[in-house]
Image 1 (tube, rainbow, N blue to C red):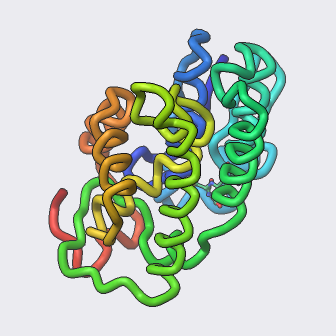
Image 2: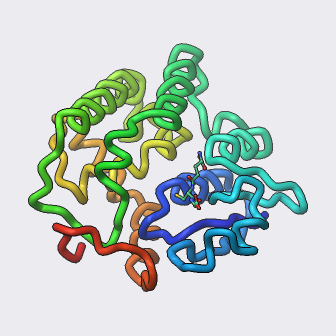
Length: 222
Ligand SMILES: N[C@@H](CCC(=O)N[C@@H](CS)C(=O)NCC(=O)O)C(=O)O
């Protein structure tokens, strides 16, 4: 399998696709497209992707695009238990929370873009960003009722699809110094220490961003 991603520093959706591929336990290669270039919009690289966006997983000649579809494809191949809780009430919450993350939280996304080479110590979150964070922490708290039945720190116990979907939020909370309560803090700390998250950050910090509008004003090196 080949996974097409964007720059690790900026592409939050690519992080999800990559974590999903890692979680499958199946062999895959990663190919990075630099989207912060003048050639990207309207260029051949974009046209070669079904939706013009990353991540895309090519399983042989079959393309699967969009992070949630990639998770589902890999769950079909590698086993749903690798991604989704086995107990039905937990599974229902994991599906719903992941879908809510996939389609929601616009204020947090646009107000706090993922940037793994910068931190924003003086960032002042708006009311709508704080409301997004409160809702996310409520979802995490509900998930941890199930997760706490295990010795594992991930949302539903074993690392899975919901953790993959919320992974970029963890970086946003850490880099923009967003306020969270004890449940959120413990989860953020656990995720930041996860070896795959650390590997992604390490690789991100080697990237040179050439053409985009970054660095974001107010940021200091991470
Ligand atoms: N819903 C999609 C979102 C994918 C997405 O928006 N990817 C961004 C990068 S993080 C992209 O490829 N943008 C390039 C463009 O729009 O030109 C998913 O879940 O994968």
